[in-house]
Length: 141
Image (cartoon, rainbow, N blue to C red):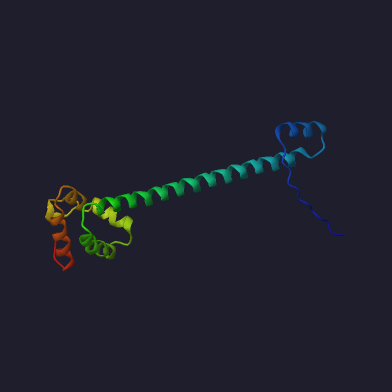
């Protein structure tokens, strides 16, 4: 004869567990193990949800920072200059986040090791544009 095993999910609060333990209605060891596993699974799910939320918040913040930085860059250049610069920078970098990073961190040797951001914020965007044009045609730094 085949035996069948049935799994029933039981959720008890502390008071109910105490009553069941006193009454001896169920095997306490299996119930205790089940309850501990259930609590661990719940804690794990909660941690996973929290980590996922945090990861999404960080991703959203990076996107917003990139968007704000691109807007900031755009305020220093004319539409014509942007029409020249952005496609060229997109060819050199894989995405807007990398463009922003490059503009903020790359030090141009020919410009006293100033970053592109330093140059255009200090009113020397023409120097930056000359450098870009020079590099575009294959010039050296």
